[in-house]
Image (cartoon, rainbow, N blue to C red; front, side, top):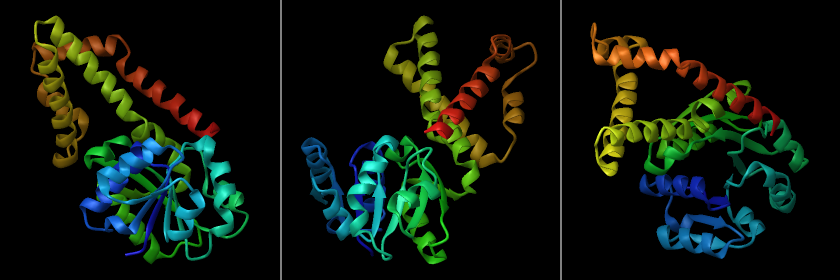
Length: 265
């Protein structure tokens, strides 16, 4: 197994490390994480037993596959600091919305093997959804290796780069929309007399089960909705109110603005 490096050890990096190590794609002593925060370094070292450093160049120099797991606004500075130690043996994996393959290569100032990805936070529980695309220097074998790594904490799917901003809105940012939905559902249940902790459990399980039905039955979401809506029943009245209040439109408009912001990063 090639040595893995992470620049940044935040939530997404931690989720990725967990999946990689749990699935035996690397051993702890084959992973190194760089972070200026001592607390961040200590957290991942204690949790996974990996090597840590406060020096990005050290992590980059030791790694074969290097994940740039920092926020988009820090990419230019991070790449400036490590580009001298990056060679043609390195495979760079990015997770930053708005940062194109061409932009990242331009920052390095030389041909570099780059795989652009957009994961999401459910990776933290092994249910991530990651979109993947590559530049021309990445071989098919290297892409397969990357897909194994990215699939270790959920699902990973290759897409054309032109769809990456849509991915940000439909899966990258969308857990937040779902959490708002779950919170609202639980609030209503509490209003109906259910204890708060129980309300969150019922709402979250309903969302998880509904999502599983879409994925596993192959049925259109509208068909699944119709199965729940009995004539003159409770559910169709709830759906009617959602339509009246512009539920679909609110979701679509929220996702479109998310996509536009992603394009501007």
